[in-house]
Image (cartoon, rainbow, N blue to C red; front, top):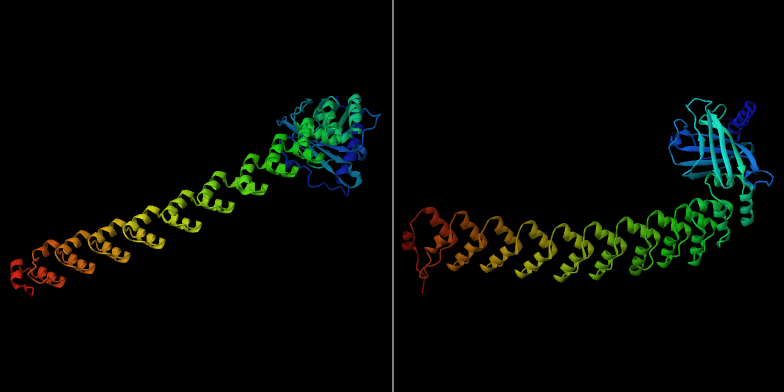
Length: 481
């Protein structure tokens, strides 16, 4: 059964129509509209009088105010929290609004049986400090278009509990403070603990701390560990669930952080133990830099590994080498090979897959190559072994000549056989012989110290003429004595 008459409803329509339509009444950016809400969220707005932000008079144990709602009521909302908003009487020419989230609410209720206008609505919240009842019906009538329900909220006060609070805080609760306390089911005993914990809180702040499960003992613990927070700082820590242990951990790590900085660190999941380790090796590091480090997954062991290798990197350079998959072992390996390269050069080497062992192998073969020459040889698939084989055959080839010989598939073994036969052919000569398929075995038939050595040109002519070896021997000129 609703507690107001049809006449009262008509008056209510008229008053609220003025509030939301009258000139000068402009909702601020925090106002809620239906398309900005989740359909299953319970959203209630209470319209306060101008003096409702002052202490509730001693002689008032029951009072009523208007309420409206923007959420969908049918079927029943399934969310586990309420958003409660206060709006001052619009006749002043402006509207101020505050929002409160009421988590895990428990109430007696009467939900509408359909989504039709006129369906009755009743929500009853009971706490140690009193009872708050929302009574009304679905519909919007003269209200703004997004209103889905409206009515009167009846606030009944438990004066004994209110007096306890007033004694402890030297302040009685105003209506805008009392209503959330009842909806959150916060007791006077819970609030009183914050009246004498080392920081002066008002009732509104104490109520927030209880709602955020922040204890008075936690406040004392922060003070005992050197923090000099004010009431707003403590509420900020509570709102963002920054524990005392988390805050004290930063103190022990050498960071004297403000409440805002602690919230910043908590929101970004920064770790005071990791910060301490970085501080030991990199002196003072700001929270912003710690977050930068965390985003890039830099580790202290990576920094120390490079430092032990002889490179004390900046954090930016540490990230640079990490991105490029450079390792301190690479630097050490090149250092052991007699080189101390810059990070840029080390990356250049890695991109080209040049290994210290290749440099060492070329040196063993008698070639002291620059990095550019090493890469040049690698691109052309030249190996130190090939160079060594040519050296054993009596040919000390440059890289260009080695590549020239490789392209033409010249054999150092054949070159060695020609040498043994007394011929000192150039690699150009060897190529000419190869073109005409003249092997050392052919030249061996003419190997006689009593005769002049045949030139490449002669060998080619003899081979092409098909003259027998015996005939050629008879035609040869004896070596002069």
